[in-house]
Length: 134
Image (cartoon, rainbow, N blue to C red; front, side, top):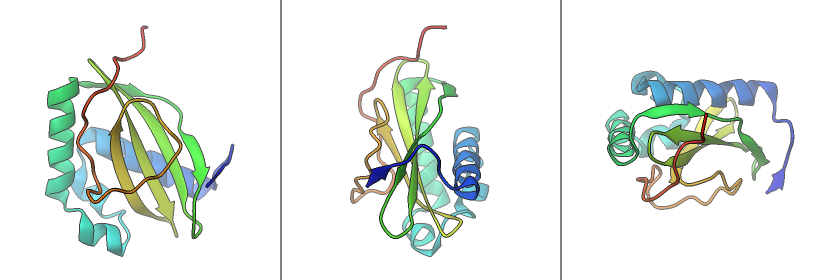
């Protein structure tokens, strides 16, 4: 994958909308943005379960930062957003292809800019770092 300073404007807006829906718990609307494979692999209930575990482990969502943008294979653009919770830091990776969400990964720690799909499309948070000081 090659890093890019600017992603496609449509893809960027879609990734930011997916992030906003994820942190707001609007899982039905988020799932409507998934492409066919993503929709088959990830249910609304699975997204809700990951959100609940993240909040339980890390505390309340506080804010997020600007995404690292990575150009992936097959015209996929990955947006890696840092998320700040009360107790720990995480990052949400949103993969966009053909104006749909083709992947969504919640991981502990800082954004990596690397897309490494696992068997679980949404991963439970394990350990992270706290939110930034105001």
